[in-house]
Amino acid sequence: MKDTCFLFAGQGSQYPGMGRELLELFPRTEQILKAGSDILGFDLKKACFEYDAEALSQTEVSQPAILAVSLISWEALRTLELEPAACAGHSLGEYAAMTAAGMISLEDAFRLIKARAHAMGLCARTQDGAMCAVMADAEEIEKVCAETEGFVTPVNYNSPAQTVVAGERTAVEALMETFAGLGKRCVRLAVSAAFHTKLMEPAAAELREAAAKVSFRQPEIPFYSNVTGALLTDCADMPGYLARHLVSPVRFVEELRAIQSAGCVRYVECGPGKVLTGLVRKTLEDVQPFNVENAKTFEKLRSAL
Image 1 (cartoon, one colour):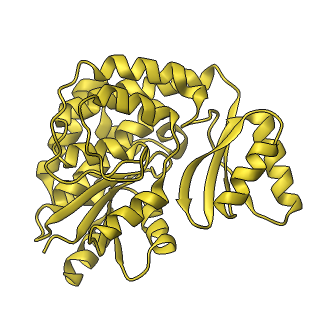
Image 2: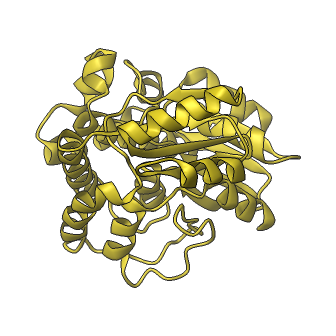
């Protein structure tokens, strides 16, 4: 029965040593690291296993490293009797989801991420942006954003109780002061750019050019979109889609609800961390969330099947 959705996490989920245990369990997945290393021009296996947290957090390293570990997890999961009914990713995670869904080759996934990480890193170094997570109702957050001087806007609708905002640093700081006065918790994210906003338009233009050189195919597994919060049905202009994705909010709450409406009851997060597993728990009822990032979590899922 096709009732399983595979989820792929975004930037920020990385940690030193990620993927090591799954690689030991499934040695053939090392070809993912080798393919990435050849395209990126640095040793991806060394980055995942030996870099410290600071070195691994650099955009040009973390994005391809997370992609690689997410796909190692996906390949491990393919050994189980799970019939995928849907693939979805959170921001960066859409590239692993596209690969799993058969929309792009492994090599093209790394080519796209190389271009995306470079463009976003350059944008981050040339702007004074910021992001923060706000623990409040989305409508209230939208209202405060509109009333705050300067540019700040919701960018990640993560769960009914948490939305990430991004924009000019001074505007984000002002918004945080407002919510502190309302007794609402805010958490500043460790980034120096306003991802998924109009401030990323230079990066989006660069990514579109790179994506124009890639061959895209129709998904073999239903692919759900951050941009629309629904099933992606029009794949005619994927370079344009990926450019829009970089400057558009991540509508993850809508996306999860659409996937549940399509009949998915099991949600398996592939790759480092369990951020998306937590968001599933906070957003959906009567579902079975899992994450697979190491030997223990792989065995836990296998035992539950």
